[in-house]
Image (cartoon, chains in turn blue, red):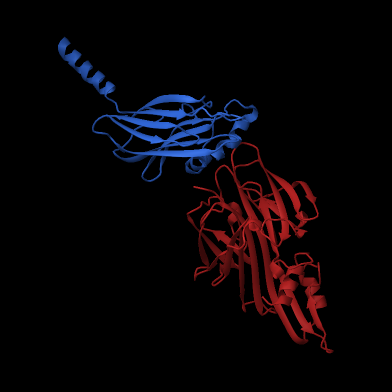
Length: 169
Length: 275
């Protein structure tokens, strides 16, 4: 009896451990410019019908009277795909702008903000727009679920550096 | 349009120059068309100029313009002023959705000859055509009397947050554009579709021209020219991002009595963003 319960627990636990995930690593490059502001950054997944799942939106959340929202439109693609329909901030998605460096974030399939991903083709999109600077957009197409752990990469030129997606089944 | 008709219809605008003649173009240009945030403002320039969006001729008086919000109600033009070459004003986008700023006029105009063969036209310079004025000033019978119905519309659109459609509904008077593609959702490399209506019915065969701004920095007009199809539809594929001056002209002989001819002129300033 006890051993059967233990076996059941083990099954549940292994299922939990095996929940698929998207491990994202993105680099905000250090730039040698006279006036530097951390970029507004958006990270999202689109399915083949361009339906959006927002994963992260980093902007000036602390400005008085929500003035930081005035520049959300500069992330043009994100603004068009979903931003303009949203009421910011979004719990678990929006946050303050990040300093230059490499940031890693892991999203678990079945949990917020990623949610359940049905099998199919997707694109992970990263967009950055910097005050008195430029804008850049990177895309990593991927297939879900992956058969085995897999790492996919893209590389930014100006406003973004290394962008990497590791898929864990 | 022949020259006199052109001049006559333009007098309705209260301007001393023709909108289209001699390459003069009227426009209302917003500082931005796609906005985020809770309390966005847009500043506008309104002028008649030779080169698209370069102010070099006369202002388009802001007192003749109207701004309407996403709820269809008119909104205030703040900080309005008229300068030597342009008028300027600000609009506060306090609600989410699409706003429209426009000039619209329509009415009858006439030309005829007196018994001595002298040419006359109505309405005179700077006078808006009213039915009462027409009744009083235009003879019922005259040598070469030609009466036509004409409309002018100059407009632009700006959106805070998510685009909306209330301001895009046609009034069914004159030449109007009913966007299939939202006018604040235009991107380089994509094709936009617009339907043109004359008095609420498809304007078939209307000539539509879209000219990108920045004319001072190139040698050619670089206009994209299309003609509306059976449904009054025009499709334009934007080659590049930028501000565009879109002009449509239409005429036929289906004017309401006593008019014979019917003419419409339409202008919109549209912003195309890079993908």
